[in-house]
Image (tube, rainbow, N blue to C red):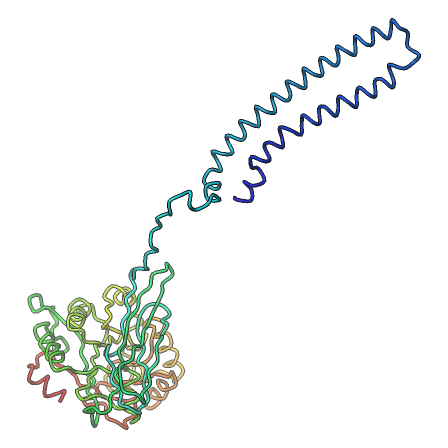
Length: 412
């Protein structure tokens, strides 16, 4: 706009009021010279010359009047146009004036992006412990969208380090989570193995479902368990940390534990997920991908303390001949691989896998291994020991009828 205004500025207006006057005068002079040469020659009579002269005088008068009128019109149009231009271009012209002629503008600070509906959380404990000299195992984070990870950790130098995870959505919202990594000279280490707890469904004892069995745990039992874990500073390793620990390549702090809930059942989301968030206890929900409500439940009940992993896409049903009759034993190697890849499209992750009904076969184990899954679990009771096959790990089933003392004994 500034360039456009310059080409039609006040100087241009003055030029338009002068040039037509020069043009009219030049035309009159040329016409007069041409008339004397052709009509006022030496061969005209005195009478005709007088008549011609009179006629010429009248023509000159008419031309003068016309010129005056034309000039007046041009000046009038120029004045009007100039006034319109000044009104229209005033802001641009003011911007070209020296800044000392105006007060400085007050501009609003650009607002920081709000998180919108993005939920992001670190995988495992927000404070990660690494023994000096060991390799740092990045646990990652979970959120909807591509997560950018920044920060460095020097495990040769004890101290605190920060790793940040940031995600943006398509509308420009931004959310982030931060992990503090503590590199320590010494620590009390977890030895032998690690308890991976297996829960299923959670309910409100004031409104119990009709089919309550040992797979159901009331909130009045789950909450004291979470309180105990929090009060005794239990550590929650990420799945990459769990795998490195089982492989014998990484140390975990004493009192390490993993929390898992199978099936993605609605009551768990309604009653269990809020309790995990209340006590800031990280857990994994093993999701059945073929559940038509899976994506909606995952989004509705998302918290920074709940990550989603695979309970298969469509293997959680009958059709097999071993164990509890799950169909995985009747599927080919490639069918299992394809199912898990489809499941990953729902959960967004395939770091851990819970075999449906706990059923497995040697072929199924190798199929899961092929997908790059870090750890896979049956329903066999026990701790996940160092040196065990990470594709065939047991868990500690937590019964809904057990006491707090029973729970404490199972994890120590």
